[in-house]
Image (cartoon, rainbow, N blue to C red):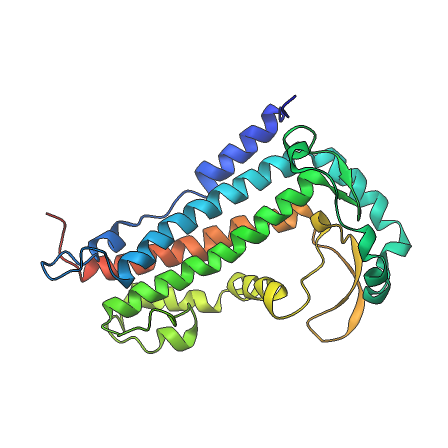
Length: 277
């Protein structure tokens, strides 16, 4: 029988999807599409970046709202699991000991159980639905950074840069400081100011846990208490990021960094583009 989430969880998820993750305007980017007779009919790098941005933002919103549905619906079970796990001192064992136990961590639960009983407990002190929610948030944050990179690509192209299709710009200080067209404009300063936003720095560090170093302990992934090397480089026992904080990170990054960056860049490109006829 299919899982039927509580109405309260549906309402929370819907509110987050429609209000807190309301999509930013993309009209300015549409104005920036090359509509000249010389434009290649198969599209160009700008068109590719805009198409990616539209899909990435849509995927971000859907993934985070879906994660919210599971986290809210399983709130009681997650709280009980977290409380029990945090009081078990043996869970703060070293990564070496965990490595020896790794063969017992994998889940053998068939994926279809997620649609029937997401409250099912799986190895490594996880709930199936909570584990899924954590993965959705991880994926969304990676998509959020990718969205910003597409913004940087479109800005560079409309600034007149010639780009290598296999080495496109990323949303970083070094990339934006090369652009000259919008210097001195308020929206440009606003956009560049987002590079200094604490949430942007934090999400980059979060992403680095998937590509450059060990990822941060997260409760939904089963790390309620873990030995981890912090930002100071010293190992210690840390509590994993709780579900509410992980979800809040994704929502606030969208509201305070991703959406404002998209709006600002779209306004800059739209201001230098001919209107749609």
